[in-house]
Image (cartoon, rainbow, N blue to C red; front, side, top):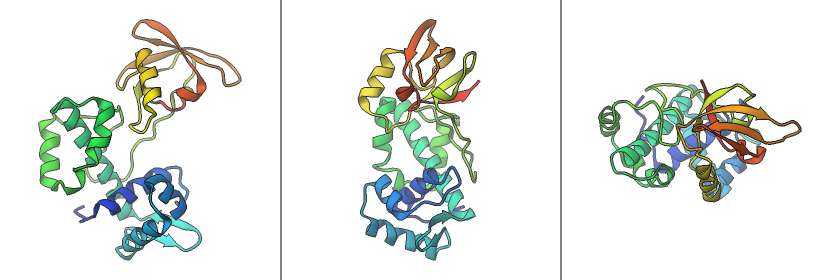
Length: 219
């Protein structure tokens, strides 16, 4: 699908996709908070998208992505993750810098350039954070559970969102918990107790609060 979208429209679609992943409608107030914009600004963007049948705006109820809107949202996420991979693999940026920098120029990227970048990167399966790069024309992205959802004996590959607090990222790094690392759950203490993880041949302990900020692909 080849839709011409502005930066604000593409960012709004990405935020809507993330907010509606569980099946609920997104409200303009939630979108405004997620995007750091005023409700009036978001409402104007949503109206433009609704006029193009990319979203279905229900007054006082919320906003829902149409089938075309879901494809556009997933395509926008795909582009962002390809650009992040380019910044990390080709230009040497740290994985936790790539997210911020990708937003500066991804919106003006011609589709042809995105496609060539993907091929030049040898068709990567994930972004530098460890999240999957969806296929072209995909309408969904597989859900990834939080690390804390795993049980003893489970093995998984780690993904860390770019929005994670830098202090949390630094703490995870001391434990060896970086994107792409494989971990095994050794113990899970009851009543929201900590996890004991096998990381790089060592046992590491991680509390529930931080473990819920890390996502995984079960092996």
